[in-house]
Length: 221
Ligand SMILES: [Zn+2]
Ligand SMILES: [Zn+2]
Image (cartoon, rainbow, N blue to C red; front, side):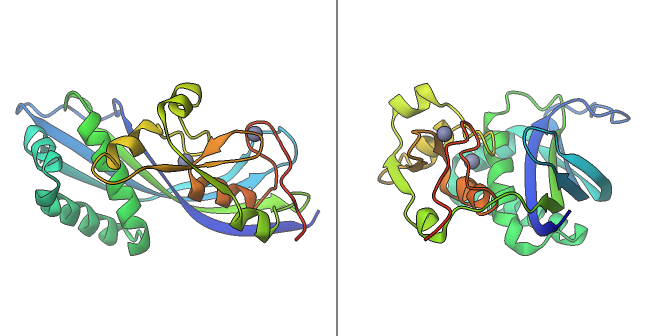
């Protein structure tokens, strides 16, 4: 069966118990664990689950921070530079390419801002993923991707669709980010499903169907 190959990085952030990691006895210490994985994934047609052919941990780093200090720095955005530097230096030392750093740091900072306690470590997983896909996926046409409709994110949308089904991030986070600026935009497909622009573009470049309802986008210009 002919296969196509493409590569991309995925990031995810969770706060959870880690085996063999003991909580710091000192109060207010938060452990941030950075993990970098080498992943090989094969996607199968239809609704069959993806097959992981490889899932290796390449590198791992522990970073201890003062929880309330970090939260305070993040809330006054101009002074969070030192934390950005700490995280980026660690990512570089693990081999995570620089162009991925801003998105990872952004995701981690939003997570720390929302965290209520430092009792469990925050784990940041970065996967260097090679995806092999069946060639029976048909990408959407370039003109249909270029012409995707952008709409203003408002509470009607967030009530109906609270998260982006592709990256699982809350749309509400965009409203917080954009509070000082003008307005947050979100992409709406003709089937009225909403996604982040960069998320849905990456999907449509692989397959032309809406990930939620399989609505077909045009495949020919
Ligand atoms: Zn998204
Ligand atoms: Zn849809």
